[in-house]
Image 1 (spheres, helix red, strand yellow):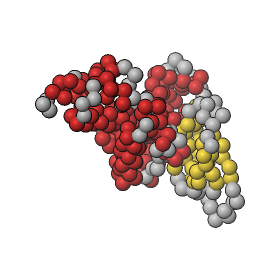
Image 2 (cartoon, one colour):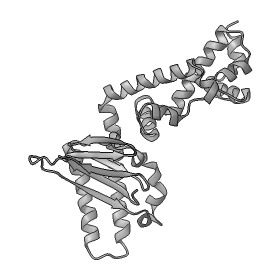
Image 3 (cartoon, helix red, strand yellow):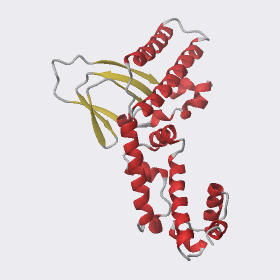
Image 4 (tube, one colour):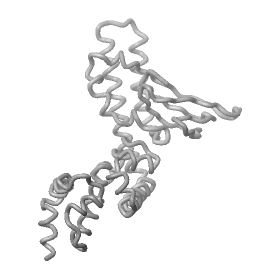
Length: 259
């Protein structure tokens, strides 16, 4: 288990990256981000004499951030909690941009440290993270085919969940449940969906719930309390509140519009 925030780029490395209980091959350039207390290990396999491994790792101890703006803002960079399978693939131009910032950081900490050193390094780190956030947004857009496949899988997953007894036994599906079943981290999934559709994972769950509620209200004689129970709510008041917030109507008002 690591104690640092780590940012790295690896190229032409023959080996496996292990994240939790899963391992992933990597032999191309990719940029990865990890937060403290994530379990990471690298397992090298048979060496390829034709390979020319290269790259770098930047490690930042959380104590270095104390008293800075980045200490307050670090959690907004959700990609620090992504898994390696959600790595950032950089274009040559993007990698050059990141490398220039890294060189600025390296030059600063290799000079005589003074009262400005921490502030300057932190500013460069924030710049690097902001560029990484921009490049992730680009990646969400340029990988539309694979991302829309995830969107299709999400639709199927939610449809199956609400059509089965899972909703009775386990209540409403959670963001964590959805992300785990799609083999993605919760942060990555929500950010990707927000980029593609303008809505987070939680909003997609609520949309499916309202869709099912509307069908039951317009095609059955079930009471609102019965519908709320069938959709995983313990209390019908919570269902009424959510339905009103999404449709600007109460469930009874919606049902009355069909009579």
